[in-house]
Amino acid sequence: MRLHHVGLAVADLGAAVDLYRTALGAELEREGRSQTEDMEYALMRTGDSELELMHSSDPESPVGKFLSKRGPGVHHVAFEVDDLAAELDRLRGAGYEIVGDVRTGVHGTRVAFVHPRSMGGVLTELVEK
Image 1 (tube, helix red, strand yellow):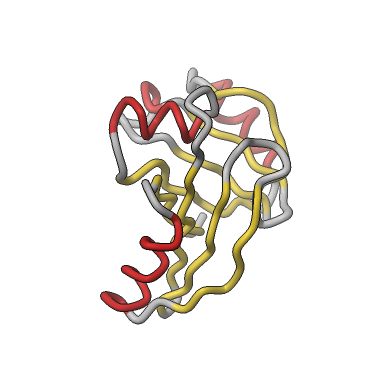
Image 2: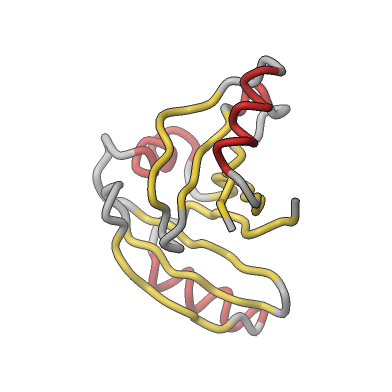
């Protein structure tokens, strides 16, 4: 497994893009709207690392709930896996709690989430290669 990206919930997507561009020299790779969740996103690259900036004004969406409850900050850490189904079977078999169903993420690949209760308080995304 390798670190794929870090997801950050942001209060203002445009301001956050400007912040990471100015502060870290990050380059905007792509902006869009998630087809599976009510959120806007921006993917930013800095060196070999990627940031997924996420914003939702819908207080009932997952990112909107996060922003309402916790404010802006680290939302999740994502790791790339070769075979998502096999990884999920392995994790479930070991007692880890999976959140929701497998879905298509903003990178266009299949993703799933491991509950923070199972991962030391950190929402963890698995991104299929």
